Picture 1: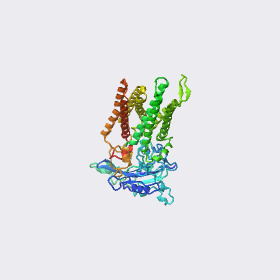
Picture 2 (picture 1 turned 90 degrees about the vertical axis):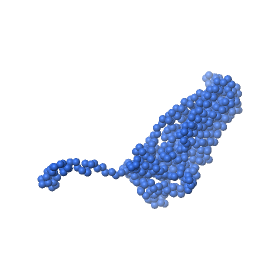
Picture 3 (picture 1 turned 180 degrees about the vertical axis):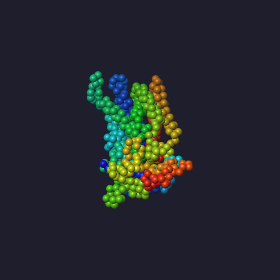
Picture 4 (picture 1 turned 120 degrees about the horizontal axis):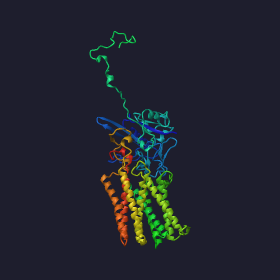
Length: 243
Length: 328
């Protein structure tokens, strides 16, 4: 079984919003209809987005860290939004695990958005149907595109390669390896939704140096008045090096 | 959550309709076993069924205003295997149909005896329809309540108390309305319904208070730490990803002050329980039960129930709100 997913590396995400704009551009131009915007240039703009980047500050100054946090549908392996849908418009594809909405069946009751703990679903104000990330299902299988472009728009747009795309059920895939090797984690594990999308934590490459490694406590020269023993002229154990 | 007026109307109106039907059939069951004497049953049952249908129909109509595509509403019957909403969409028309047939059976007097109980009591078609309607009324209460109670992370709703409260709150308002109807159509039944309305209102009082106490003690399972997966006691959101609003900031926040919420809570505690119990008890104690007082009681209780339902939605705190700290 295949489960396509995104793995988002918070360690390299710089919060540039390229994934947000490329997602909007691709998905608002597709056959499924526009992601409507209202009052885009006025006081209270609003619109449909499948992907957003939020920013959090962790810690207290000066020990703070900025975490840019891209947020989209996690394509849960046990999606709570699917069984609650009364029409069957919400479904999870068996072949690749993508959670999708059939816009022609959706009655716009918003119940699935209540049933998603992550707030990943937005009702489009113009089309009046529930919309969400499709993992760019209309481009990842498009054989008219060159092989390297058959990936979600956000993944292609990311300048720091913070977004990986692949099959998390294939243990040899880059995403599986990233989750395994770089401590990938799921959001809100307490609800048992088993999100397919994973996040890689912020990592610091730290070299731990103890004080006694900088200055040997047993350095004979430190011992007052005593010369090194054995002396330089004495033979050493291996007859090559002195102490 | 942002309380939707259409859903408030739907749940309260069909609750009255279901409760009223249960009241009608309660009286008929009593009469069947000769525990109650009804003089003009035909008019009472017919008018009662019509009134119940009006409430159910109004509720159904209100529900359409909640949909983005009401013209596709029929599709909602598809997923009855998994979705309580789908089950509700099936049970509501089935119940309305049964109430209609029940009313027709009483109006036309078409009551062929279908069976005879061992004690010699004849079971006619209206009794069979009444039993089916009663089962459907409870099934509908269950479906409506489970739409909310089945969502585990909306913890204010995820409790058997939600189901119990939908049953008793709908029942209380229905029996109160039945007493209003009886005061006009079958005065000998008024006191019977008034006493039952008091009993059910008291049960509802207990159930709703229990859920209020439970909800006030809930500790959130999800935190900002589990939401973004960073283990640190101090996390401050600096940007929510957009400047204006979005579906996420409108649908899941009631946007009212804490004090307004508190006043709504006290309003419904008085409107649904305290005032109706007092008025109904006073009416029952009176030698001459006044229909006007009962009508006022029903009105107060119904508006109280609307406040109760508003509070029910507003109180539920969705874990997605953790991602919108500025508003939360």
